[in-house]
Length: 152
Image (cartoon, rainbow, N blue to C red; front, side):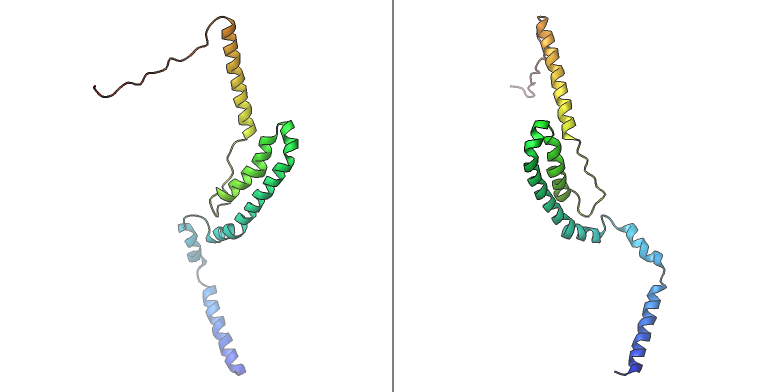
C-alpha cells in the first residue's frame, strides 16, 4: 500500500471517531437509569476475583481460628474470634449478593447476645430461688388444652 492509501484510511477513521466524540453524552448516561441490579462489570469482577479471594480468606481464617483457640477459650473471646475469622469471610463469600459491595454484614455480635441470654437466665433463676425460699411454688402458666373442632 502506498502512503496515499494510509492517509485516506487514517482520515476516514478520524472522521468516524470525531462523529462518535461529538454525540450527546446524556443519551449514553441514561442507560444506567434503567438498569436493574448491579453493574455487569462488578458482577464479573466479583465472580472471577473477589469470591475466590473470599474463599481463600475463609480457609485461612479457619486455620488461624484453630491456632488461636487455646488462647481465646480461657479469655472467653472464642465467639468473637469465630465471628471475625470464619463467619464474616464465609458470609462475604457465600451469602452476599453478587456484585453488590455496599451490602453490609448485619449480624449482631454473638458475644453480646450470649451475655444478654446468660443475664436473663440468672434473673429467672434468682426469681425462682426467691419464690422457693419463701415457700411458694414458682409461677407457672397453665397449659392450654387444644379444643377439638369437629363433632364426634
